Length: 266
Image 1 (cartoon, rainbow, N blue to C red):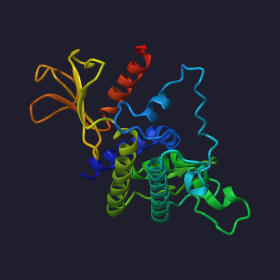
Image 2: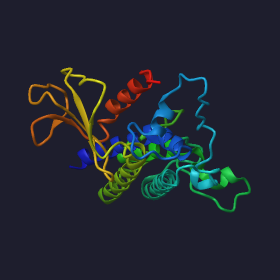
Image 3: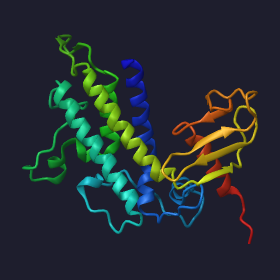
């Protein structure tokens, strides 16, 4: 049970990292609630137009450490602040319980130091952003680096981290689930209400794909071939192959790229 929960939580953290850029792009894009794919996702994926400026996120300070200039989508900004703050706070909690590394260990999570003169030093590891925090939490959830190690001179050293207690694994799972759902509402929930066919076929059988979503729920993609489809995914209540969130995301992004490459009628 704990093994399954740990890997499911790690998968949610990876989804958060992978979709973080799309969420940042959404902050600067007005919401368009009746179109699929979301306008912010199109902007994030489309790099072929000379009119598109580069999406530079590597040098941005974390959202919780700065005021975002003129956000176009306040829901996306709120979601970004929620996700970032939640993962940062979770990293603090896990580090306090299981971290034994030395200050010079690059794997170490460093707490905030409000008394520091430099803003990034005061922020501690939060200055490295959401990606680093999510990777740190993922390592603790998977009990990485919990075995004794050898120093450069061959001297044995105690493990840098202790295994994560069960109650903190459940807390990490709760936070990761809440963050993924909040992010999904921005990145994917602008999709549709009801259903529509996707331009790309099923990757397994070539059948028609349909995406369905409710206003407050992430989308689901189903193959209309039925039980004969051999796709490596689960089935819905009618026996059709179905991709839930976030496993359906690659199909939706493929559809987005297909729409972008299709010339629009004048």
